[in-house]
Length: 604
Image (cartoon, rainbow, N blue to C red; front, side, top):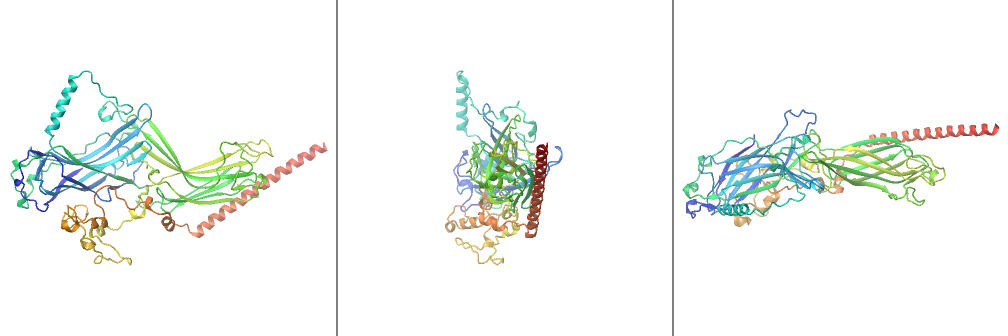
């Protein structure tokens, strides 16, 4: 069950009894600051979804816990509000094409709310008030994603609701009376923008996306009356009749990242895939793909081995690419749109002229057989490496069991452009002494590509206590706490984290420094904030595959042991020799039969 509860209150320097402030009936939210603090830079590692589970089977949902801090500046005085709420909202914005346009829908909402138990509302004092919250996240909730013209977002929000501003209420009443008195006014057309299902109760969601509900209210916790909480200081004594009401709604939002790891154990993913086959003109082929840390923007090593190409073949170009397919499904009626993209990773040779069925005689080739005007008569082996697209273009694969309107799938595509002398594109013979028509071999290997965040720097984090105490390690691996002091506030590393807030709060830098010393209004040291683990603000990932240099990835890629690789190469060479010998023997047999037929015809 979602939960929101009061944790602690602390005074700002110079705050005192609010009775000294002038009497105010209502105040705006200007000057009030809200902070949403969640662990792991606003990310949630979701459980591995089970695609085989029954629809009604219990899910392994996740708990998102954090703190909401409400700060009233010195001199602001105490105020009242109607409610305080924290929630998570999943929305989608899909471009469904001509005739439908852009559809914006709320897929899921879960929130926890704290309401005043009486008409007096909730009283907020000067200084900093901290509330702890817990939100239950469904184990198959859609993760953030986007494709050209489409996106899914997860937004964490907090709101303080006051009373309605009398001036805005008067303006609304005046506008409503004006609209009702004019019969010539018609609602503006929304153009290609489709109406939201929140305002279209007759529109049912897609049967294939039944999990995606437009609004889900989680059970509300019991209300807390802050007036019943004990006062630890005389600074909170005031005449409650003088406490004004807040007007309007003050809110804050931040992005929340849901991460689904294809590895059921939660570890780092790697890739070691092999594809083999046989095709006329090229003979047997073996494709190998390897990556020590496999994710978006990873470094992929690819090997294309053509064991025994035909001596009549000419191979022009070989390319390995990542094929990405995004299937967009409207949660309203199940209408689908497909977006496909191809990202080249590594290539060899000059691409042929696709407008010409028969290539020119001087067209560059990476392999030309002895019967096709060249000198190559053995296998063709190509080794290449390249990086996958970063997360601005490449998106992680959607795992089975996750309910989302944007489903992304991937495949490693290997393409070989070649021709066989005297044969057309379908392999039919049309003359011995004519160049062959251009044909293409395309092989796809389906793969699951994890998020670029799932790298060792993120998954293999140090223990929680080391961050809590601010422990920094020297080059020799030993603790170097005493010598690692902040250059601005001169605070040792072990004291740079707040020790006054409740232990249930998210670790954050201390905020009780002299303001003149650190130069901030809230008492936090900018240098300590930068050096410590960020506790608020937007997503601040400092380590993902997109930020790693190519040289760093190469130096730490897992290597296949030399013995195993030598065995693989030897096996491929033996297979190629056997295939070539069988082909030569077959050609020799056909030649002998043909010669015998010719002799018999002459004798006859």
